[in-house]
Length: 108
Length: 214
Image (tube, rainbow over all chains, first blue to last red; front, side, top):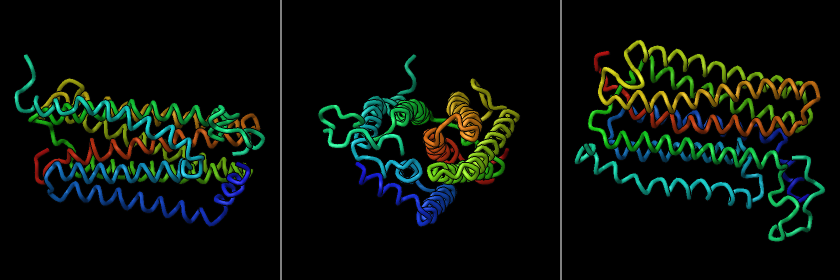
């Protein structure tokens, strides 16, 4: 663990300021791409897929670099991320019901 | 980063470890809070998506100007306040207190700019007739989901701004260690992260068709 810490301190030297700025620029560019996509007329399903994909990529970059999760122990990643994914997938179980409502209308 | 050197060396994680994740307990608590809060937003966004998919007349309410332009600028402010927070944390970890203090306040500035623009955006939409239970364009649930999700996010930004101010003052006066800056930084990045989903899902998927009347 002490070894980890030595390398972690190393990550914070001047070289990484440039790296963080790179991440920031990429995040801005991806945002610009998203806004652009909103104005070319894609089928809504495709558009949703691309937008969600870009958002997840942006979220991953924020978590990995800005929130430093990449530099933490992997056990922390394994504790946090699957926890979120599991609950999210459980919530998704009810989602297909919305297509039924779209077809048949709200129950009266 | 600094308080755990003595713990856990040679202790197996599977024996419980002294500090199984190798981070201070406050930081672990913040991570756990962030995951649970992320699930709150996930649930809200999923409820919104559910209502939207099941609706035939979901309003496409956001015009290029002001809504999309302003919300893009808001995204820029929030992302920029995240990078200034990164600099604040790394300055605090290197013991450069004055620099860290300055960067925290740059972050606060970004947060306040976001809030002012967002409040103005709300006012524009309210002037156009958007309410939580009705709107002139279509499905009345649009307003309920819009105000709930963006409102909860604004509340998070507001709390983040207040927390950053408190932490920056305490850190400067020597009351709080540098760790606190990092832990508050985690929260701030999380607020930014949530917006990365709110912005495309709420705004970009509801842009008004070009040429549509106001």
